Image 1 (cartoon, rainbow, N blue to C red):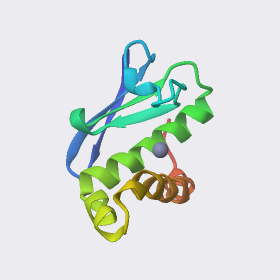
Image 2 (image 1 turned 180 degrees about the vertical axis):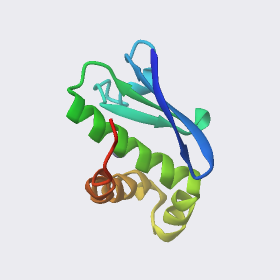
Image 3 (image 1 turned 45 degrees about the vertical axis):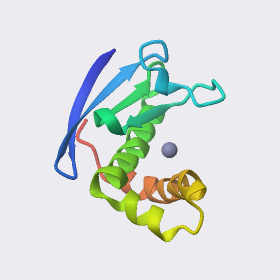
Length: 111
Ligand SMILES: [Zn+2]
C-alpha cells in the first residue's frame, strides 16, 4: 500500500492510497467484485486499486473525493433525511457522485 498524496476535504486531512484488495478488503463490493476505489468513512481515507491506467486512476480519485466530500461535509446526512426510503441512500449518492464527477474532474491538476 502506497500513499500517493493527501487532500483536505471539508477540513479533514484525507490520505489517498494505491492498494490491493488483499490489503484493503473494502476494495471489493459485497458481491466480491473488484472496485476501482473506495472512501472509508471510519478512517477518512481513500484507497484506489493499483494497476489502473493513469487517466482511470484520476477519475477514480475524483469520484472517491466526491464521496468523501459528501460524507465529511454532512451532505450525506441531509441526503438521507430527504429520501423517503433509507435504503435508497447508496443509489442516490452514487447518482449524485456520477453527475458531479466530470465537473469536479474539470479542475486542472498540476501533475
Ligand atoms: Zn461511488
